[in-house]
Image (cartoon, rainbow, N blue to C red; front, side, top):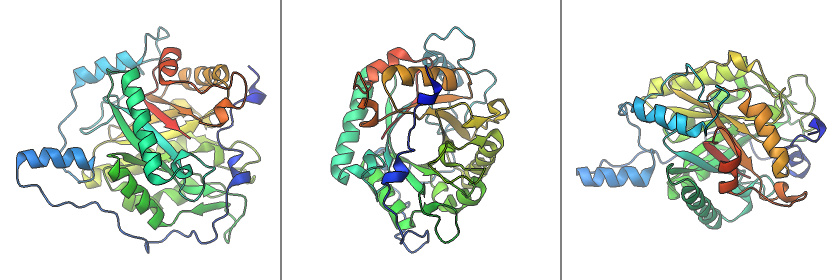
Amino acid sequence: MKLKNVLLSATLLLSTLILLPGCSQSDKGGKTDSKKTAPKTAADSAKAEAADTLSVKKSDYPPIDHKLYDSLMKFNAHGDTTGRWPVKNTPYPIGGAILPFKRVVAFYGNLYSKKMGILGELPPNEMLAKLKGEVKHWEKADPKTPVQPALHYIAVVAQGDGGKDGKFRYRMPFKQIDSVLALAKKAHAIVFLDVQVALSNIQAELPLLDKYLALPQVHFGMDPEFSMKDGTKPGRKIGTYDAADINYVSDHLAKIVKKNGLPAKILIVHRFTKKMVTNYKNIKLHPEIQLVMDMDGWGEPDLKTGTYRYFINQEPVQFTGFKLFYKNDIKKAPHHMLTPEEVLSRYKPYPIYIQYQ
């Protein structure tokens, strides 16, 4: 495998992104619908919870079953004999944790662009119907693991114009994030807010999303590809995050979870090269945070398999993810996007987070 041909998940994205001069982040958009009248009966309560998918804050979640958790982690190691999986000495999550009890299947993109992913490419109802179809496919491929649908929204987008502050990123207006939350509620889906910092930094961008991260159904993603620490404009080279950056995010999210009495949050870190994440052994884990290293690259099946093996399997953190591209994965022979069955047969450990772009 030639590393020069390593998968590029979004580098071409910058050349096709429509600039959004009106996208300044503010509170002027609609408010999130996070409140719901308390049901009057136990039956109503159970029905409401199923319909709302964690959109009601709770202060007390039942503790997880440690025996079941250990069993599922061993199952997801998929017969690994290297001793890397399941990862040793990781903390048990707090109550309400999604992983590994469910597999998350997410649609990725931005509502302003049809070229950034399936989330913004299709009309909303058609997109949600397609997501439902993928969820059913994964449930059929792995009947042991229920599937949690998700919308993975790029809330801060790296772009080719420096903007007023020269940071080469646009923050999406809150009304767009509210729209994604509304769509997710229709699909009983959770939401990921993803950040591409460009010439800004994660310390400046993350706190601006705190009001959303205080909601139990909202999780977070950070993209090293567009973290340009050396001042290079995004899209010209692959960026990087250090373990210290990931630890900052984990600490910040853990504090939000504790303050608001939330279930464990999922943190997605995208990766498809070694240098995208440095000092991985220094990454700190928290009971409040479930950390997923997501193999974010595109290409033919064998290339994706090599990338997963070298940069995900061999540098274990906690959980793993895998990204599938409806268009980019079929550009080269054999012009084939991996099916759920093929993903499950090829990879150790099983990816517990699946993203479609």
